[in-house]
Length: 300
Ligand SMILES: NC(=O)c1ccc[n+]([C@@H]2O[C@H](COP(=O)([O-])OP(=O)(O)OC[C@H]3O[C@@H](n4cnc5c(N)ncnc54)[C@H](OP(=O)(O)O)[C@@H]3O)[C@@H](O)[C@H]2O)c1
Image 1 (tube, rainbow, N blue to C red):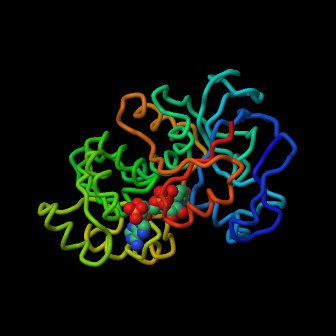
Image 2 (cartoon, rainbow, N blue to C red; image 1 turned 180 degrees about the horizontal axis):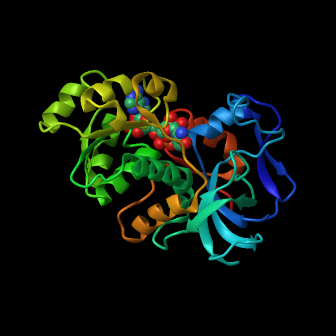
């Protein structure tokens, strides 16, 4: 099958497209004929070899953590999904940017989502849903999201709004309109955040979600006033020092189901900024690493 691969760790240029052996569904998994996959920040770290201590991959490796596609093999013990279904979901730490990928967590892709939107939904949904689960009942509460304009932040903001929260979200100037259109009270990140948030929420903020590669976790804890109500998916070391909570995505179909349900209700549209064909996989990683927003790689 055609697949994006890297034979050594390094810059985007290590990526190439060539022929790789097809994977097959095993117990508890499904195989999809991939339509598209997305580039997540973790893919860049895996490609650079920066996660070999924690999540080792063998070379040559196929990048990609999530995908959308049509189920063409169903592993033993799997129920509720059939050959021909269009699903989005998660592979392993790598392996989805190819003609075929094995998913260990999946959900039916909402019909209203484009291929690109469904491709962009996998890891962002699983991460945001795990965060919302950790934060508990948000009804009537005010949640501050640092990085609300990103893929995970957009998902978390949508889920929190659907749960009845008021959401204040940070993003760059160019993303203020995106935040506002989602129903988020927008503000920018960086110096002065506490003052801006105090002006927007004089009643105070109940909880915060840190969803950006930024050293703002201590500021979020200060704004909320209770570290236990602050969650990060980025800076677990500082979280441990402050008493805040670190959360990770899980390959759990139930987390994906939340995004799919809200997608069907028109309350969650996954963020997509760029679409790049598989042949240009190196360019896709370059764009993703340069702040170009959410990049989707079209495969079929
Ligand atoms: N632990 C886990 O399981 C897990 C899973 C998925 C992701 N993550 C991590 O979560 C983070 C977000 O992932 P993503 O896919 O949503 O990435 P993304 O789409 O690139 O979003 C990044 C967000 O950070 C914002 N940002 C950029 N520079 C900032 C700064 N200096 N201060 C504050 N915010 C800033 C961006 O805003 P603008 O674009 O508006 O500038 C955007 O909202 C990444 O660090 C990723 O590694 C962790």
